Length: 283
Ligand SMILES: Nc1ncnc2c1ncn2[C@@H]1O[C@H](COP(=O)(O)OP(=O)(O)O)[C@@H](O)[C@H]1O
Ligand SMILES: [Mg+2]
Image (cartoon, rainbow, N blue to C red; front, side, top):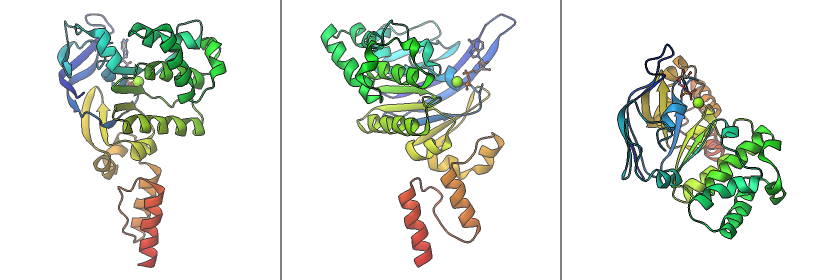
């Protein structure tokens, strides 16, 4: 499913003293099957942007097309429920997403809503809780007894349970420890490899380098850049101006190159880096 934004603006609190232009004339095409990062400072409009993809927010101007679904100022798509199954959004604050008495019921909610039987939905809940790194004993617990990181995992399980074509993740690893973060990113990677489109809002440039293909840079409500990861990280001066750090590996390669090495700065995994350094030393 490809996603197109046509001249989309979003204003919060229209005609109130709090009126705020959170998105300004956004033109965008997110490719089917891409793994796209959305980066930019806090308040730049990242969360606002992605909530248009499943029509949680409607544009104040312009339209969004997702395959045959059209979202515009006046129109939620006719088949809104279907769209929300296809484009699954995990919120930045997962506590907003959990509302059932038990975790099992919470994960079953989507599948039941989309026509699965009670038994099928239970099966799905059992496999999804494991996929996000929690064991089955959690199913009977209340979502409100969980830590922030665990709530996030359950929220992700609830969205994965609907088997969406597009998975939209708003800072999904915030609140997870380093191992949990790595496991979660690898889970998204395997979902991507199974043919889905992934859109992830993140502040972690190491993740962007390692996992993503494309990058959208938001700045003051505008899409300022939309490019490949390699292209974006070549422009360290631009990122610097935005207060965004380079990935550790890119920084390291640039430092080496300043000392006379000639290593490809687009390298994104440690094995390739070791090989390149070895080649330089031996060559
Ligand atoms: N419900 C709202 N009402 C008014 N302003 C909002 C609302 N939600 C977000 N904003 C404002 O819109 C801007 C963009 O917010 P957001 O999309 O959450 O940015 P980001 O996700 O990049 O941090 C921010 O300045 C924020 O304060
Ligand atoms: Mg946000």
